[in-house]
Structures are given as structure tokens and as C-alpha cells.
Image (tube, rainbow, N blue to C red; front, side, top):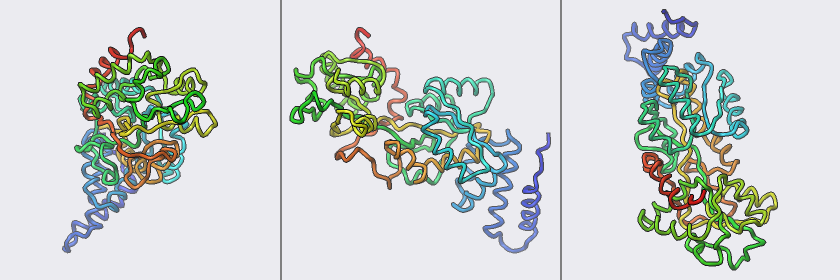
Length: 379
């Protein structure tokens, strides 16, 4: 089947022929036109080039040429399919701002749970159905996606603006934000001179039966193992579990129990939840451990068989601009850009440990087993 020819193709074709017929050395304009023509023709041909190959060509251009090529291709594609675990309310402003900047691109957003989104994607690839262009999920899914061979390498220029451990070295993984684990407590039940300042202090007898921990806080345990060393970290976790910890699924629910006075302390509180509860007048506050454990950054990937690779690249670029990152920051997320500060409600940060997704992704099942053996007895 022949690809449809648009007026843009005709315009580019005439200009390109002019480049070839000229006896003068090729100018940058000619090089750009040749690149754009090749990219558009390949996009029309579908199977002639995959998303990874196209991104490699685009990312080799100068910034202006790259932008022009992506916009030209995205205009023809007209849409981008984005699968993610984030609630629609959290991404609405991102979508609104993106479409204001690129009104010719429609974002088709599909939301699901972490495992559900990944399983849907894997099923689509097994059946040869390629719908998703960009997918966002927990960073520890990176190993699964790489093993399936469905992620496109995207060495986009914005990677130079990001903090360490918010991306891999190879160019497949990048994370726009993460969360921090803090020790939250009820200010009415815990006097200021008795508040726990470290995980070690939670081993004191006075905290027995007064501690809460999410039933699936696997990443928090991984952080302990990184910081203390695996042998000492597991030993400490067992001692902590002996404090008769209340384990229950859901950080929000556990934070509510602490705010209501049913429990005194949540061991693995999310910093943004504690900040939000405190700002709304709940009798809670929190301590930032030293070092503070950051969850592995939430991952976002471009698919190797993305149907709309130009639009996908533009969306990825936007999510890591200051404008896009500020939307995440306004939601109390800890963003990836080096030139933007993290907000911990005025609390001082000393040392930070960002969980490395490339380390714990392949070991995630092992980590789950270790956590369950220590903390889920009787659950």
C-alpha cells in the first residue's frame, strides 16, 4: 500500500530536490529538510522504522532541527497514547499545559494500577497490538520491560538536566519524580522531647504496639538494606518487627490512624501525605531521617513500537521541562530536575538515598519475600 502524500511532503520534496541540484555545499537548512523528509517517510511506512530508530535519528540533530523535526512529525500523527498509574486528576494540568503548547496533539490517557498497566502492555505486544506510545509506572518494573524488549532508547537532551538515579546510563529509563519516607507522629500523643529522630530510636520499649507500617513497604526495606548493608539491615528489620507493629495496606489509611490518635507513629510515612495532613490542621508532624530514603523514581518510558513516536518524544520532553516538573512539584512530589529544589515543608535534608531501580527491579520478588517473612506474620 502506498503512503498518502500530503502538501507538506510535496513542499519538502521540492526543497530537497533543490538541495541535491545545487552545486554549492549543503547548508544546514538542506540537512534539516533531508532529515525531516526521511523521518516523515519512515513514519508513513510504519514497519520500515521503529520508534527507537526514529528517536536515535532525531536526537542526533541540533536542538532547533530536532524540535522542528518532532513538531512536523507530531502534526501528522495528531495524537499520543499515554498509559500510566497516576490518577486523572493528577495529570489533568499536565495534559492541559501540553495541549496548549501543542494544540495539534491529542493526549489519549489511560489509567490503571501498576501491575494492570504493565500486564496490559505486555499482552498487547504479544498479540502484535501496538497502542501505547508512553507508559508510566513504578520504577521497579524497568527490568520487566527491558526483558520483554519493548522499551525504546531515548537519549533526549533533557537528560542532562536531571539528578543522578532519576535515569539509567543507557538511555531507556527516566523518572520524573519520587517520594520520600519520613517518620510521622501524632503531636498530641508524642511530646516534642520524646519524638523519634531515627529508626533506631523506634526500638525503645515505649514504642511497642504503637507503630504502623504499610503492608507492602518493600522499597522502604530496600532502602534500609542499601544504607545499613543487607545483613545488618535484615537484622534491624527483625528487631523492629518485634515491636508488635501494626501492618496494614495503604499509607493514607495508616496516616489517618496516626492523625486520629489510634497509633502514635507511622514508620514509613510519605512526606507529601504528612505535609498535606499537617497543612489541613491534623495533629501530625514528621521527622526526616538521616539519610532519608527516597522511593525509586516513578518510571516513564517510550515504547519501541510507538505508533506516534514524534508526539511521544514531545510529551517526554515536556514532562521534564521546568513547566512540567513544576506541576509535579506543586503536588509535593520530589522532581528530577537539578535546578529545582525539593519541598519538605521547611524540614532540613542532610543526606539522601534514592533507591536505584536498576538494582532492585531484578530483585523485586526476592525483596517481597524478605519483607513478608519479617513483617507479614499473621497477616
